[in-house]
Length: 632
Ligand code: COA
Ligand code: AMP
Image 1 (cartoon, helix red, strand yellow):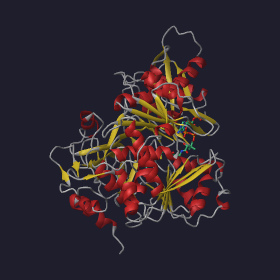
Image 2 (cartoon, rainbow, N blue to C red):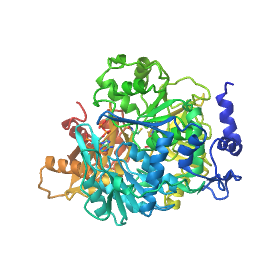
Image 3 (cartoon, rainbow, N blue to C red):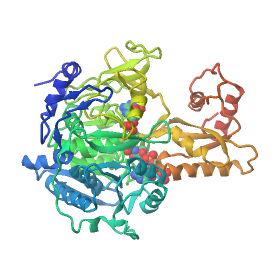
Image 4 (spheres, helix red, strand yellow):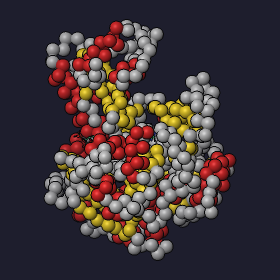
């Protein structure tokens, strides 16, 4: 029977407990919850409080129990190395339960934290699921982060164990994890008890202390381990994301709500069934990778693809079409930047015409605003719906989307469609009142948030409350700004904090500023995200030197760039640091970052009435022209 989106949505908002109780019937529980939502201590809401379940059981064992063990669970394809592999649910269970045994042998127990710092290989997925099997909390760290970031995550999570690999492969470059791991272990105040190295073929590292063990050796006396029973509100994982300072926020995910919500999204948002082939071209280090490479598709029991490659250069702009064609992919989820990269290399879609994409039904984009040009280009080329949807690490699944499994809605280019069932999205104006249709303001979501969203921050209840739940009483503040139009379509226009989106990667300009400030010659600095045709935004740094510095500007600029690469990692894509004389400020000393960004983006700006010295804006303009940021 055809469903009506508005009816489903209204039901989820008016009767959330009934709605999610019904949805929760679809997952495996050791003990079914009788308490659906505990609202007694806002903003700390608890979904499915007295239920018990296991993430790995729902991702693997359940499908085997239901006679689907020979169905393909995971397809690995690495155009970078030429390696390919396929795993049925049964084969995945064998690998995961054995590695779970290895973790137990290393002393990992329920509730212990395990850091996974690995490339896009099947063992990374195995490690995540093995943690889930024994109730350990994993924290995956993206491979593009450097030692400092890894160390801060080790310290904050107090991880017992670190799982890594001998290396990762980026086009034209091998990412050696050993020095990065060594650097992090040296920097971290907390000491991990063991490091497991997965040795990649022909790229093994020498293990040189009793602290280290190879993946292979860790398996040698390991027994298969069954899934442990976990409380619905115990944690599945911590995923650190950029905060407004250099201290990352540990977003936690509770077990029950995560399984319930993510499984529901596969059909209702993405229209994916158990026999479909699904592909999310992201990285397991990001939320998109957690939710849509690993968990949601496996909860659903369909086939998920793990792709170790890039949209271009591995080997060409046809890489995505090849995967879709080879494995008969039904839907792909990626970031707009990936499509901008393909469009740049192959605007006429010459590579596209070489492949049979008859299986392909829809493309989903998220991570940053999908610009209408890119959406239209992709639509013309692929001849399928291209859907922009909006979400955050904090929520783990889409807040707004075209829910294609419920009812396909009309596309409005530039909008991320309507609020998804479960999310009561509002706009609040600067005067703290609710906005009318088309009025701009802060985008908020009425509490309680639906299952699967973050119940708190790791060991930081107060930060959770103050940062997200206090500015607007009774609402979750998304830190995105925009408006909702008369048809209920949500338009995400910008962030309201210092977060920028670089190639779909979330970065804090404040964190980059913290690094630049550590340079001996730098007196003060400002980092801003300027518009970039390929990556959406790129960070640039403006640095003012201490008086009496006699090093030349070029050297300082190079040193600043290297410091950001060393401390945050290559993922920051920080390639421009300009030495300037002065920063424009208000009379009270606040740096006018917004005005500088408008100048760099060639957007109209007003000279702020509170500016201390308007002449500085012209100086900045000249500096940007000199450095080719702004063409005269
Ligand atoms: N491990 C180590 N380094 C990594 C890495 C990883 N897993 N991922 C990226 N990096 C490095 C890159 O090699 C690059 O280093 P470089 O400065 O030495 O060249 C740097 O981090 C910046 O990476 P990126 O911003 O991704 O730029 P790129 O030029 O390598 O690729 C795109 C550009 C558009 C092809 C790429 O960003 C992409 O495929 N994006 C897809 C979308 C995506 O994954 N989004 C995530 C959330 S959905
Ligand atoms: P992350 O937590 O890394 O997923 O980043 C979340 C942020 O990315 C959001 O708060 C938005 O600023 C941005 N974002 C994600 N999806 C979209 C989208 N479809 N349109 C606009 N911005 C988006």
